[in-house]
Amino acid sequence: MAGLNEQLKKMAQAAQAAARSSLSISSETKDKVLVEMAEALRAKRKALVAANRIDVRRAQRKGLGRALVDRLTLDEKRIAAMSDSLRDIAALPDPVGEVIKAWRRPNGLWIHKVRVPIGVIAIIYEARPNVTSDCAGLCFKSGNGVILRGGSEAVNSNAAVYETIRSVLEENGLDTALINFVASTDRAGVDRLLKLNGYIDLVMPRGGEGLIRKVVSVSRIPVIKHYKGICHVYVDEWADLNMAQAICFNAKVQRPGVCNAMESMLVNRDCAVRFLPGMLKKFHEAGVEIRGCALTRKIAKNVPVRRATERDYRTEYLDLVLSVKVVGSVEEAVEHVNTYGTHHSDTIVTENYDRALMFLRQVDSACVYVNASTRFTDGEQFGMGAEIGISTDKLHARGPMALEELTTYKYMIFGNGQIRT
Image 1 (cartoon, rainbow, N blue to C red):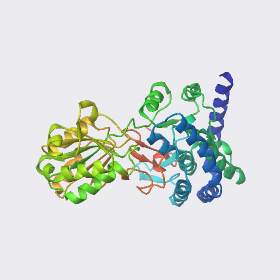
Image 2: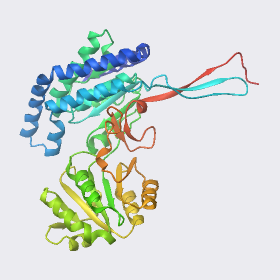
Image 3: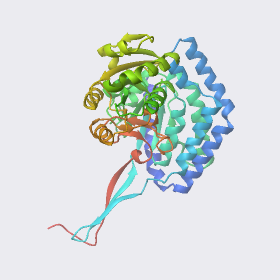
Image 4: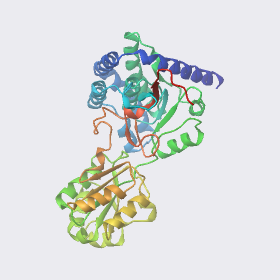
């Protein structure tokens, strides 16, 4: 253990030094390197798939859940998407050095508020190998050093992606300590990493609620996170019901094992009889298990619906399971979302502008939609190139986090001899 502790400390020290020196790397160089990283992933896709196959087979032997295995799996299509994300990051403006605001004081002081990197960021994550390349690319472009610590279930996949990216830094004569990977799967190492507050400036956990709560409880370093995603779609009485059906089906079924999938569907009482029978039938045919309130069960007709409990409305299923509730008004829908939701992503489907505006203003979530699926809460879908994570905190960032959210700011003040009297 002493050896691992020392290794992690040296890694964090090296990352800190590399991050400070990265301020001299030009935007043009950053973009060139990111494109080369993207090309390297495509060139080594067969080796990456082979490494991933080892992890997937082991996960299947252990009986890990379908959703986790899906997040873990890499194929050539997903590797191409990882490569494209790095290219997208390269195409975005470099936030470092951007003047957010500037003003001159009556005494002549010229004050500039300027974006700067946060420093060193530790990413602690589970299952998804694409996190390795996305986070490495985002931190590199935003001038931050990064320490990547993936879960044991994806250790071969993550190591292969990391080595591919690291080799590009080396080929370009850049400090490889800008991007670091903790190969050890010893869980005690995470605890040690979370205490290196003298070297690491921010921790971002990505994974299940248990992992995130453990990180928050142990860390001496500021943590940005979301615990889970209990996302809602509310079908208003003024909704286009064909649109509502398409949105609800996409939000639940398109990829149920992710944090921006719908977990609870709310339907206004005045359209429930017209909407629910067809919607529930469509869900049932897609293999979705429905858990509903008394009125939902009454309206459901030939579709089996289990009785929903208080616990169901507070559950992130990450699977083909859905809770359904009939509500009497948009006010009741907002109250339900704010009570049972997790401040992640919520949607209203309506053609009534006033209802839409009320929902947008009163739902306390990072992302609030009108007439669109919750599945769009994603850095790439928002045009950010990729995301390093999603935050439901209110400080320092909220929602999908990418380049701008990986910077802080400092004030640069120009004077000509002013003194305070």
